[in-house]
Image 1 (tube, rainbow, N blue to C red):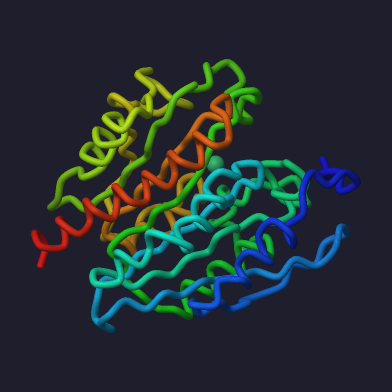
Image 2: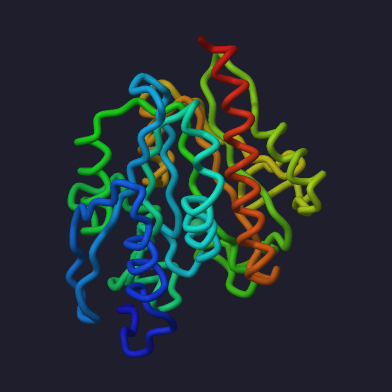
Length: 278
Ligand SMILES: [Zn+2]
């Protein structure tokens, strides 16, 4: 089914592009353009150099599912504020919005009705995925961590899981190497203490969920592309992968605050972790 492009819910240009361009302090590069029936969408990456070139790299992205919008606003806030506190510790590569067509039209999928987060194993991926892979491969970095910002629309069951109960609180996916241990638990408990509720269901969309945390695979080795998801693709390129999900039944302000607090808390935990693995 082709997604209708007739009804734009918001403006990528107004909400994201202009705000990014106002961030004069950063290196903001257009790394591709997506042609659609609804217009042309430029794609942006924000590179933030830490205070030393050999600092570990952190990759942050939001809205590979276009209707999961809170992470975009959290990234814009983070760039405007707290990020400066972390330049002694990390270099950053940030893609604030992976699916601009879905963002404007309020859809999980892209213009062709395809889930971009299931598109990383096909031979000829969608243009958004092709551009993102080219960016990451050209960058050639090994990341300390990937922080991927998602939301869980509580009013629409995900395809294939119509019978599942959609979580109505936060939860996280976490991947880490075989010789290491969770730091997601620490992040989760800090967020809980800060007042964000976590989902206590034991199964989420078919996966085992342990008190708000889902562990799927080990990083540091090539990960078989089972679902064709972005985090599987990044499994061999990143030591840690942490994915936050916020429920859309929370108001947008609380969800944005949740993502912002997640970024801060995860980076604080990573600062401590760097000392342990060096
Ligand atoms: Zn998502």
